[in-house]
Length: 256
Length: 256
Image 1 (cartoon, each protein chain N blue to C red):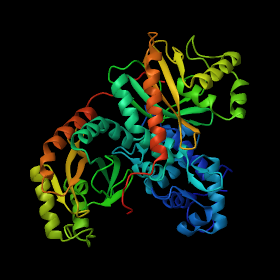
Image 2: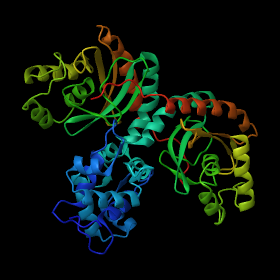
Image 3: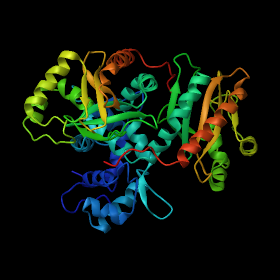
């Protein structure tokens, strides 16, 4: 167990196994995991057995496999991601209460926006993002904010590549994207009416840390009815609140 | 990279590295990680470098190491833990708004309660639990609930071992623990005045899934002033809400 036979590391294979799961497929059979990871069933079985031993995966009653609570613990306990989420959560709740629909917090990871949290009303307008879901940076309002304040070399890389299209409104030319990024920096917010889905409009603002670096995007998704800009002041106020929380000392919890 | 030299698997070592971090120490130097994991610095360095390559760890400006956002993503995207947390979150927020102080959601993992979520007021009474923190089952109100409805062999194992003590009120004898567990099952809730900390009282109730199995504990931590029992109805109502959410179909989010 744990030995590498073909040059690919055990860690790399283990990551492929975790990547086989999705929000819609939280439980998989070993054979399905082998298929999705392109590993031999015997290889996948051995690695899954070791991951189960460590609690990183768990088996259900019919030996089907799911992500274990221990994996969540290791990822969460010391996570700066979780600290950001915690600092933002009260403001996200207030936004959600005032705006209805979806309120979300996203960070940049590579060329994507990764959504750390999403609060949704049951009757909210459609939205493709999810908790721990990703969207390419140029597609969504959160992504445009994170790209606009991201490193220049990231912007040039994205601008030099084909831009995937979700709707007729999605930004797909480098000229339009460059103009949109300049506008985000000028205004401090962005609107994406119909960019991800025809019926929905995104509104996003940057969230800064105590050093005034942009570390996240706060966004709401509302119906695409021409009134999305009305949400900007509430978003900007919430983003300032998160910055204040990130700058202040943590809650007075005694050390364990 | 990824090869095993001494018989311990790469995965097992990687897990020890993640275990070196804590909520109070989210950023560590390589030398400190080596010390805590009892790995040679060279071995730790190589493994850390591979984990950084995969994004499971990240390096800060001075090459200090922290848990990466990719680790959080792999753990969260398909997590049943996160589904439970999401179902419980609105009810936890309502509880928190009504009770003030701390409201928390815990699940059993092995012989511990693992806290998935905690909402805290800034001026809340002291509390030792944390998000992704653990406490032994017999210590806290959440743990007693999870133990009371847990498998008989788990109860016998805990009852046959020495019970760690936090305060003069902590349950430390098998007789008292057995009586407490019977009382939880009879009443459907538990109070732990001063069991974890002299100044705090815990109140916990079981959360059931659609099959009426106990899957979590919902709890509040309030001042230890003899009035903790007043929180029981609000907790029970919230637990019923979580059960209803767990039993109902998920939000109508279109597939990606």
